[in-house]
Length: 375
Image 1 (cartoon, rainbow, N blue to C red):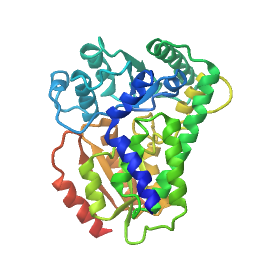
Image 2 (cartoon, rainbow, N blue to C red; image 1 turned 90 degrees about the vertical axis):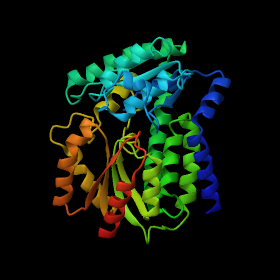
Image 3 (cartoon, helix red, strand yellow; image 1 turned 135 degrees about the horizontal axis):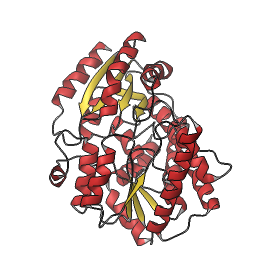
Image 4 (spheres, rainbow, N blue to C red; image 1 turned 30 degrees about the horizontal axis):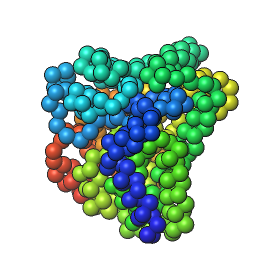
């Protein structure tokens, strides 16, 4: 148990001090490129010798960003632009953003207008219709342009062998993270919800090979312990992000255990498998095109909504907690369908609204306390 706590403390140190990690990499002579949501091909940055650095907004109020966005706008976009406008991201050599949702596309233009003269934007255009040859070719062509932009930002040439090596590291990391999610769900007494979040967030601020080594050590330590799930309420959490400190505390206070998740910043980000043979750029495109069950991806039959109660059943969860990111159109569109699918499957579900600029979550506390009593 003491080994687990020591390992968790190392993750918390990284997650709580991302600027210190940036300082370390810059002191080593590395360039840093920011990577936002979702499915950024950050293997290109890694293969070029750069450091992909996760930027998913921050908890706090927006001030400068309000000059660019209306109030009814995704807080990830607002707070990421706020960070850029207020100089918090000035050490980045570039910022990579996709256009996979209706908020990210205008965000990219506002970034260019407000921050682009200091931190260039690398726009990653990905096909929503990924299931036919034209969509795959679009992804390949787009990633070819992104590769050139990354090379320019890093001042290097990305070789195929280096990219294959990075793909292997990222595949190994995603596999280890999937194992961690399973193990953490079975060991809530050792890994609280808050600590679980910090393990995951640390991976956004470290080179993946460094984080992988730490995660493997933690997985080995947890795997040697018996399950501590008895007495906890096993749930599946769904949404875009979970890393709101107050939400984590409420879940911990009410003895919830996250036995699986459908979080875009967590397990959805670990779901991709990139082929390790053939042309590496085509492999990256294939990894993206093979993705399924995500609210931000083209999903005409709404398999994502059915996958959530199926995941709950598979993981032995007693209920589903949907953390609804305020003003997130893709999630809001899926939410009523997901509730219906959960009810049809006999899986209790509750919806909690979250926002990076919300100051208090007392209503959420009451909802989660009541939901726990129902379970």
